[in-house]
Length: 254
Picture 1: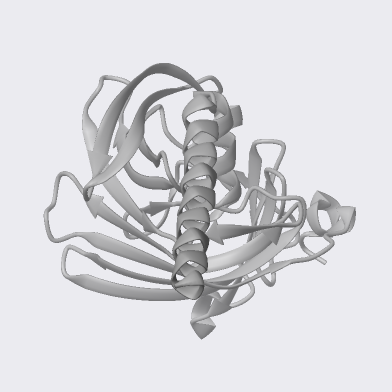
Picture 2: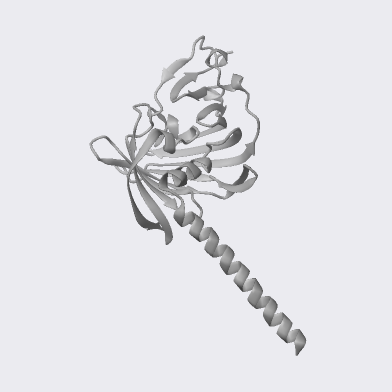
């Protein structure tokens, strides 16, 4: 009898602890400002104090298939993408530093300034593979509650505050529970949607001693041509120290 009584009390205590913990987490997330949520979502897409990951890209554009592999090293908003394959583009590099971007390749004596908005491959722009800095590049002009795949989200209407931002305007679904971006719609200055993206987070990294979901997949669909799709898969995320020299423009073609 006493054993049953103690077991029942133990179960009740466990339920109370679980309920209080769940409530405190939920309450903390509800109180998180949209700006902080956007910053947290950026972390899950590469904006951290020293991180590296690999990218595998596959695209279909007007029936043409392309494939590319890259390694990205980032610190905050600065990032360097080094192309690993295929052989005809191996060694090409994209450097993002202070919102400016440059391109370099073997045999080129001097790096070339480019725009993050320029197409890299398929539906992906150069800026899509760099460290994400929506919190710094955009202002939140409106928010509303919404859902994506049944998951409660805060839907943010983002407007670029810098002409060097990859997109003019983004509608962004950020999960209230996980604080990661789940879906994005991209618009021109005139307000026309030209592509959408969805995101998955099956990778994990530790940021500031806290385990954090990290992006594993981004699927970009054209809003104009239905069958055009680009899939970007992320693997081997690794928190590491990144030296200043990695982002030194003078060393890009060395």
